[in-house]
Length: 132
Image (cartoon, one colour):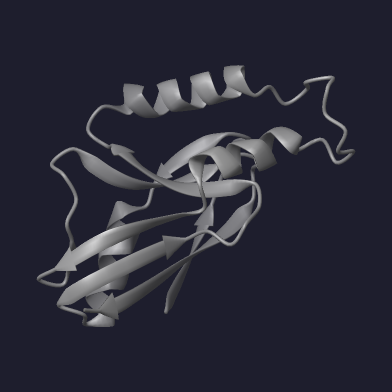
């Protein structure tokens, strides 16, 4: 298993971690298998989406923040980050990638993103590559 850290700078932010995931897969030495990219945090997640046009990321930040607002008066949880918990559950905390030739099989425009919903914070990402 390979672990790397991610430092976020805003409350809601999507950070392209594709290069770090590629490095972790290469470091594993696995030529063919599955890579699990996992976020061990309850107010963050992992997602795959377009990494060519930054407008896609800004739209994800904008729309997720409008759909689930931080200061929604209907939240019962007292810590003030219920929106982050909900967004994490909706986006998910992991992604599985097919590995071939010691690299992830991503589409032309796809990238792997760390999704922050309660930042800024220091976070961790775990990558487990299994031969198969």
